[in-house]
Length: 600
Image 1 (cartoon, rainbow, N blue to C red):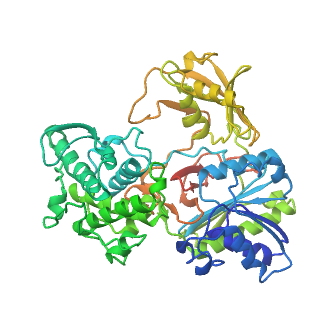
Image 2 (cartoon, rainbow, N blue to C red):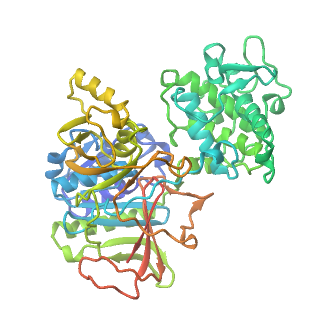
Image 3 (cartoon, rainbow, N blue to C red):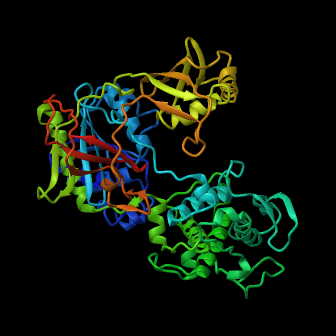
């Protein structure tokens, strides 16, 4: 088992009650308070402890003779290699992210061990069986990119609350608490709110010169006041739009006085680790006023700086980090108020920021039962009975569970069929680092990649490299592709390999001069899979929030939504012929807002 969360708790219980007696569980997470309403093996006293170990102990109380080995670790750790996976008869996934799913899929392919994938989101769920050479692998169908928004919309003309959330989470939070040196569209050259003189210093660097209170006020006036005033100076932008209003500290707190010692009477900060708690705001479903949002903004900022001092400069937003969620909610609401967008509660903001559709324990239980049914078929080698099963409501057929025969392997899959990929890129402007970060790691999901041009090794990652090798590869990363010791230009074929995953693929380089900055922000395009059919607008899932596709707060992923019609040839193991009465099945996957459309 990989994953001991919402699905994992139900799955472990169902496995031992079904007669499975030798089980290993891998999960890197610890138990959160928010898990307790559906992950029933955990109690309040277990908060902060290993999910895998606590789940194991809980099940052994009512099935003491079962052998369960828990691992509080990341499945991508080197100890869980191909040889580790070869010792098992079947692998069951209950994961919550695309990266780990792809990694397990590749290890199962390399070891020849069947994989059963699963996921839920709200009342919907699915279970799929993946057997090397007999059914499609998890990556046979390409996963569309996560929902993104144009940079100009986020930074200049937001019209939805989700735009404000993305701005607060990916720009402001990162700029304040993450890497300050990264490029970030926050207009960091500032003029003081009380002066018309232009300052040449970066407003985010002032924290080295003043206390957190004054620094927080300067940031507030800069991003909610000065930047809006600056945007309003371009009158053409607002000819057909409602003009935003700048919000300065003095507008929200006209009676507050900043004392000489830097203190002010905005927040109480009585040793709490929650801005809400220290301010007496108890209900996360309340919508705060502008003043309350501003107060939470200052309180959360102060607490983040005072309690996370050692982490400042490397923090990233986490939907399970209460302070981070409070700060992002408050910042997004202040910006929303400026642009005339309705304010949202912390509960709603957390759902949007974390792409959450809240999990349902009953769905997890149904999916866990279906996983065990398929696992038994795998152990019996009953290939003809394998099913991909979707948990959904189909009113016209009056059914909740829909089984379909698995797809055959996709001959265009670069993972299980070694189909070459094509990378469109400008090799005279792009660096090797762009290929490693944006393609090999981000798109191909390799952890310890090695890149070769013929017999020349351009890049390699691993803990066993000598210092001079590491220095050599780091130097290569910063070089333009065409200027590498072995130049990479149009027509070059690169071999990319991950020894941990035992995966190798070829990448054909195709020279492309220009890219659309808005539509192709990475400055490159990776081609290779047979692309999925795009879903018509009227067939989009109904559980979207402000245009963002949501995924479960749990482990989870996926979801099917069958629609009538569709006349494309279905790919089934036992039937090569088309069916004029096929059902179009939309398969949602991942906590990365992914969606596929498959014709059944």
